[in-house]
Length: 104
Figure (spheres, rainbow, N blue to C red):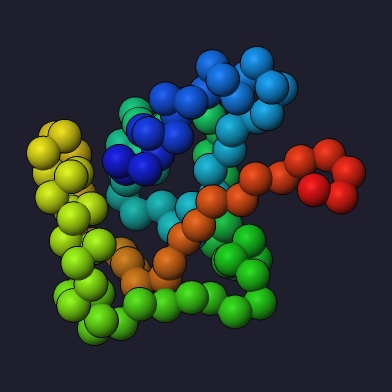
């Protein structure tokens, strides 16, 4: 959610460039999507078939506990007051796509 909020902080700059802001999530458990929408001001789509994640999903297994970047992100989210949960499948890695006109 930290990344979503930080991305939304750029929304006015993106609007000036006529770049819309969308999110694609892989699941909607309970009221998680409503909670996510508090931090993300663009349109949110649920990709239940995971077509958006490409032909090969990127996974992070037990190495998640060994990566210092993961611990830094957790600490940063905690300090900013973001709270998550351990429900759902949390090992598929996401990403950011910037889609522009023409051959960009």
